[in-house]
Length: 395
Image (cartoon, rainbow, N blue to C red; front, side, top):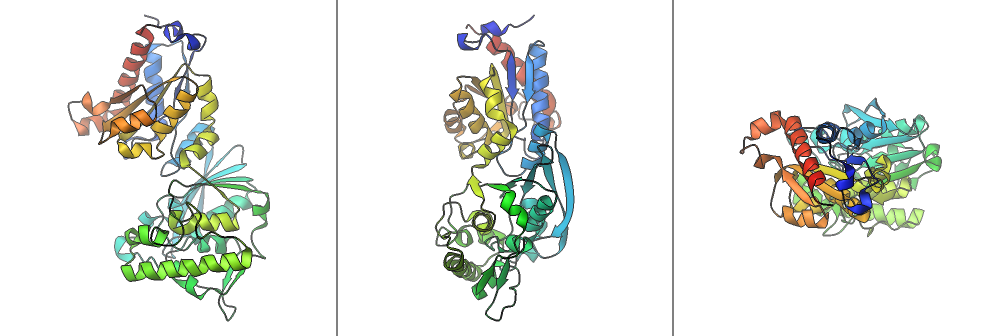
């Protein structure tokens, strides 16, 4: 049986495109694999439809992979300084015909790169992130997108800036060692040798937290403990970052102490604001723009999205809610397929203006192992079912 687009609501009768824009199913399927399964399901239900696959992410883990899949980009590898000072192998992405680099901070400065017993919040450095930025600038990029999640660091982005040519000097004129703890000894910031490529490069950073750089709700107090900081270390780091912010204000004329979101990734957001003139953006918005998601949805008849688990946290900048909000803006129906529903999933459904949320575990009798192993088939079947239901519904 052929299903005709005319059965959509009247405003969509001239449209034949379905957009599949899911996030990854964490520890199960990449966003690209989920989008492909959804696309196959749509074609099973209605072979004449045009299907657009736009793998998505929210600026955290999987952002580079999603953007490379959406934009036919390429991976670039580099040996950089890890958060503990040891060399690590990291990768980032190049899209837009070599004009845009996509970097996940976790690849070079991530908490997962340091064994728990070896974590030292006072000395952890973002130098490796700066080395990735430098590598991209050396390749001539004019646009850099950076995901700030998962860092092991609390150095205000000083290590990142040092890798780009900024010198942080003590009273004797010697360069400070890496790590946020050393910033208490900062006397002078010398930006005279900063990488010239930053003058011609637009930098955007995915930032979904509101924490400031310093204070009780600042980066050291809120995130320091999970990075191995004791209460004594937390105080030292907060004091050091306060001194760092004062030096920036006095010497460079920029007040970053109270910037909303400046505390993201151990203050790397603040460092990017100062030294790369970065713009802080919600992660979903940054990725959606880079993927051309809004334009695709504006011309669509139906949109599918999804993630591994939908719960109350999904309303805090996660992909399905962002996709649903965009679809609602253009009066396009949006359906989510998720692995499972958690607490307060209804809240996220309402926030995203989603018309339905279909959970795979409800159809696999709780067989988590089977549902993980057969996830592509389950996603495909669910998409087929939902596509048929919407086509058969009265206009």
